Image (cartoon, rainbow, N blue to C red; front, side, top):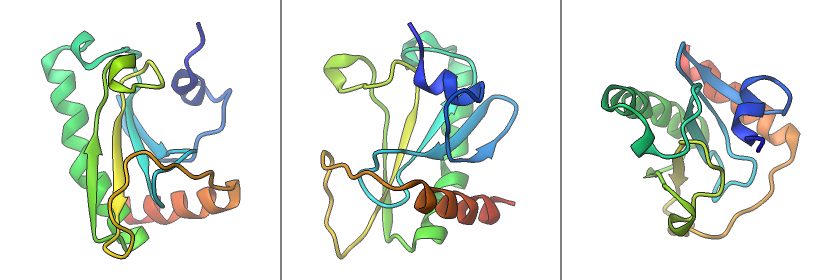
Length: 135
């Protein structure tokens, strides 16, 4: 079975990547809950967080504050939510560990389920803005 996130990692699928280190990448969600919705994934494929060793779990979560800070600055969001789902019953859609960073805006309220489709030009511009804030 093919993994969409592994395809992004190997370059066979487009991903608007704005952060990369030796073990992780962060990129914009193609179907965001709100503007700037992003994902952090490990480069090594694990379906669930319980498949990872504790050190690797800590390492992926250690990236979240830096990435979230850049997303907030790039989008002008007022706050953010973190999400991490494991298994179909938990609404994990892609079977590759990932952490959602979802910007939140006082003017919009907090919605968990409504998603929108962003166009590539919008995603390219936003990924560049976030990337620039991370360097």
